[in-house]
Amino acid sequence: MVHDRFSAVQGQLLVHAPSAFTPEVLNSLADSILNALSTQRCDIIILDLSNTNYLDKEEFYALKRLAHMAELMGPQLVLVGLNAGIVRYLIDTNVDTSKLIITRDIEQALNRQKAMT
Image (cartoon, rainbow, N blue to C red):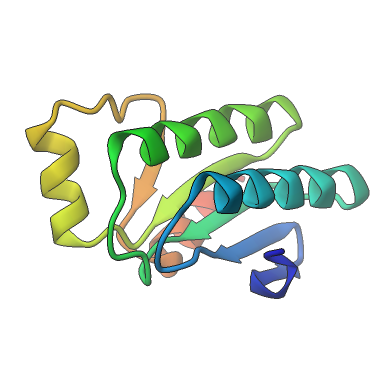
């Protein structure tokens, strides 16, 4: 369970992603986020990937599906903190990153959200 990785403050849900994903971890993460959204108001979900060492296509597309699920419930999901190796892999393998919001860090994600309100 990933509840201990969640922080909720003033309409913002901050989720610290694990260093590695498995299908079970991704499913648990999605369930936890969707359950949190059903019980509390949230304008933005920030998924902090700065501690994630590796992300393959399947895992990335699972996060993209999660972003779509969250958006259907209201808030936007912002991916933050992708490391250089993950970025290079995503580009080298032509992974479609369109329709996703990706920022350098949490501060940039929060500033982006403030500018939109």
